Length: 205
Image (cartoon, rainbow, N blue to C red):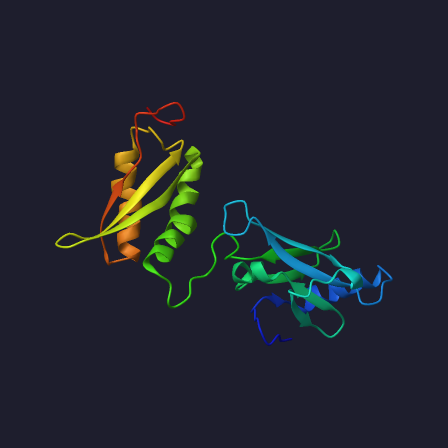
């Protein structure tokens, strides 16, 4: 199960392999496999998908994983979002269920040499934005300012239901700034760039 150009640590358990083998056998097509990919990767709408891969439809750019009884094809752009993913099959009294757990589908796992910007965006996407989404809001990194005597300042922009929200100052100071500084100690301060005069979408006023 290897490819000279690309690698993945996605795991298809023995029970899932058995289930997929039976499923593919019912298709009565020699050479048919499964294709694994992520739709809307790196966003809150990320969804892990699996489809049949017909013999004449294999994408040569896909990562090919050869199992004992079938072949799985991994969509190359989806590889970082499928890091640590597990496909499993659990039998129950109703038959069974195939489960697909991919903890990095919404936010890809950071590498050891990730930049400061990538690390900030990781925290925003994986921890902060899911909480702000409850109010239909979001926050994004606009700029990083390196100023002598001050340090590194992260400039953030709130959007959606957080834009024009009277609680933004409290949210920024108590939540976003604390979380970012805890995980990214080299950050000196966090400021909000959003123009709060527009209040039409605000959740609180």
